[in-house]
Amino acid sequence: MIKPEARLHILYDVSKELISSFPLDNVLKAAMNALVEHLRLRDGGIVIHGSGGEPWINVRAPIGHDVRSRSLTIEQADAINGVIASGDKHFGKNSVVLPVKVSRKAIGALWIDFAQKSAAQDESLLAMIAVLIGLTCQRYRELCSDGGSVAEEQQAGQIPKIKPKPHPTQLDKIDWIVGESPALKRVLATTKIVAATNSAVLLRGESGTGKECFARAIHALSIRKSKAFIKLNCAALSETVLESELFGHEKGAFTGALLQRAGRFELANGGTLLLDEIGDVSPQFQAKLLRVLQEGEFERLGGTKTLKVDVRVICATNKDLEGAVLRGEFRADLYYRINVVPIILPPLRQRDGDISLLAQVFLEQFNKANDRNFDFAPSAIDILSKCAFPGNVRELDNCVQRTATLASSNTIASSDFACQQDQCSSALLWKDGCDGLGGDYPVHSLNPRDTMLGGLGANAGTPSGSAATIEAPGLTERDLLIKAMVKAGWVQAKAARILGKTPRQVGYALRRHRIDVKKD
Image 1 (tube, rainbow, N blue to C red):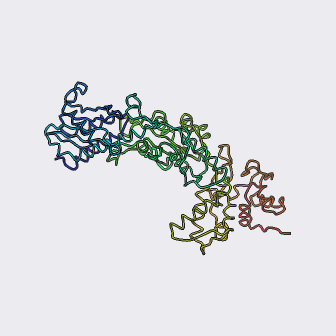
Image 2: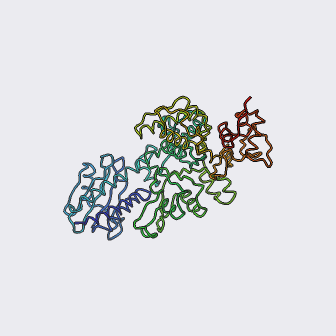
Image 3: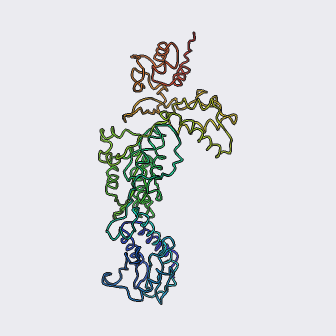
């Protein structure tokens, strides 16, 4: 009787081969070889029938002599055909034949002739392996998206790949992206078109605009939706750890590598992989990443076996990749590889009308999580709608949660918001500018010395097309603010347009510098 720990080793080795490489006959051969290494067999194999009822894969155990010179005996062939027809297992004196099923229908058989052992002693182990083989065949069958069978692709010598369908007539609902603004609808329309292909996508936009949400939408609207969606933040890991996370590692590859581990590319095989913060990958690792994106193959860390995968890669960044390429910090060939279809996500301040919709969703989530019953007063919605939210959707979510947590009544009023109490944390982080992507993108400064007005120089902080015309050589921020207010007749809205700021920002600055607003 096989010991429990030995059974685990057998299952592990067989499973590892079944999820490893294409085409299907190679996968089944590798699984059969793993069985041969662990069990004392006289003969054995895997037979899979095609849609016409004829065998189209016949994998034989490599025992004793060349597999091609051996043929099934009449007894073996009858037992295999009987199991496939009936779906029931069959026992001989020292043999066992088990059905390989897909959707409860027998499409093939795993057959084993033992050298000495009784077949019944290993029946449960072999039954589990037959189930795994059936799941593998089902996976390959699902990969055939053009209406043909796995057999037809296998006989044509092709590796089953995800094949894009024409533009779908009916799309799944993406209920985790909320908004009705024209800017959001344009991006969603592009997302739906791109999802129907296998093209690489580069999601660009400010922090907090929902790049992961759109990556999930592309996956959910694609033919890969039944497969895994895997994500990895490249900025959070060192180069060595990043290599292990993406490519996996072999046992003993480094200190602490006690077991073999599959990487994110293997886990996402047949599905979608999101590489977030791709702009923060080191130049040394970019070459390794380029190879797997181009060839679809890699080796685990510490390994020599080349693995092939079929993965759709979506990258995301808020960095200026073009500038990084010019500075030699980002490989140009990798840039062109990932920037096949760029999608620029609009900041929240450009999504007219979406703030109120998102705020209601976030408040409902807060109520559900905390068993509360809060609601917004009309004045509160008005305050939210006028805010620029430099942190975008993420900041809006935080603002709603913070306000609801500290609210004194079930109806959230305008006075409950931190900005109305001169306690808005974003004021110290916001600085207008452009990151070089050709749009009105902000620059976030984490330096406390940077003021909320972002340095009111002659051109600093002035959006494209603004009315700022003040010359400011040598002026302090307070002097520049007073000069703008005087020019605007002490009307804050006009001063804000002159400075290229929002009225709320100008109001903060007036209070912080203790400037009294003159009234007629």
